[in-house]
Length: 215
Image (cartoon, rainbow, N blue to C red; front, side, top):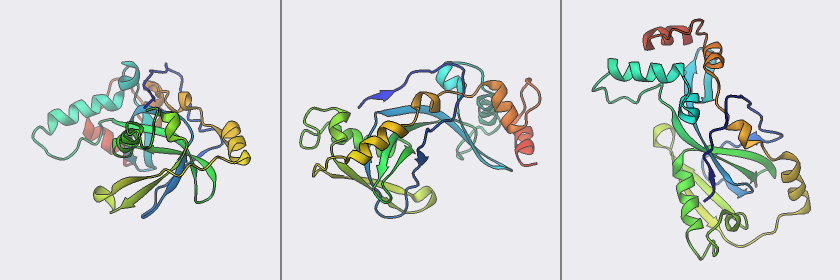
């Protein structure tokens, strides 16, 4: 599987081009993968203004990240606590898909569960005889979602009957393909502080950060 793990510098962009983000609903989600698979490390925090998600500069570029500082402090102050660290970053994967529900080009972003299963197809000669992601682009897959919240599970089922993309779909892909380099660019320390309302560069404790985000 071709996964783009390049660190992309300090510029920040959130451009998905003309593509929106696909929301996987309970039951069947039939899609066609139409791009390479890209990877990024992201923080996801709940604030008083809703959830904030951004690429971590420390994980992608070894730059400073105020939220990583909070993660370290939280871990120290909560040693032995089995609750997940709310400030840590996670690895996510992104790929462009055609959503068979409405035939729109969208971005699928999820953790490793779905993409490990896709990688399994690539390594299976019956599905992908050349062992490349280009093989995977030749047929649809069905992502079945069950459960809710922390109990959510995804099962990826191949639909290996090859169906050629239409002329309209090929044009949609050409014109609307997301800029994954931009989507993988990390925020700067200053941009993160501005987003979360941190006015100083001296760092804050997890407790102070929680008070800021819940104002």
